[in-house]
Image 1 (cartoon, one colour):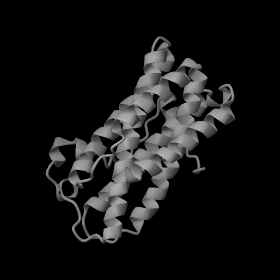
Image 2 (cartoon, one colour):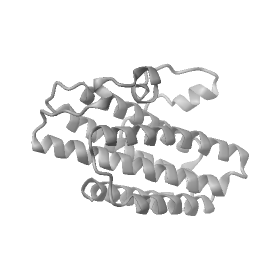
Image 3 (cartoon, rainbow, N blue to C red):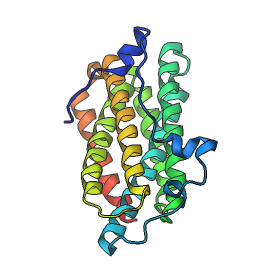
Length: 224
């Protein structure tokens, strides 16, 4: 498992702020629209590198779609619990931003979206709703398992992108965006653990099943 960091959620709860540059602002700020790094794709990649880039963006976009629908399903069930509902909503808002940026990256780099988009939505909502119906601890255990896999996936992806040889500015920016999103996902993992994910019934089994499902989905969406 990835090394744990100081939990930014805990710092927020203490009234402290954690400042960091947001690479994603290159895609969300109107003042940065039209930059070469956000509007063009490298032409000097080898076929293997191009395949790697397309697979990475395809699976990342699919993952953010699924994450949005997981939180949607959890929020539908748990919104009556004000504290838990607000916590889920906060994480969901971050995932909405992630998806908006991934949608722009998919268009920029001319990547075909996965053919399993509708499956990702249905499966994500179902997973979120079912685990929430098992209780808020199970919902947090689902988040813990999902974000563990996604954090490790982003870490592996960054290593692959480090080997991509190109002078095009979009690739360093993409790496910074992925680093930012990885930190966000690991923050969600921290939040889940702090909110008693490991108290969920059959925690180990639930984590193993959800984690394995995520890893299978990643490999399928790279190709389909």
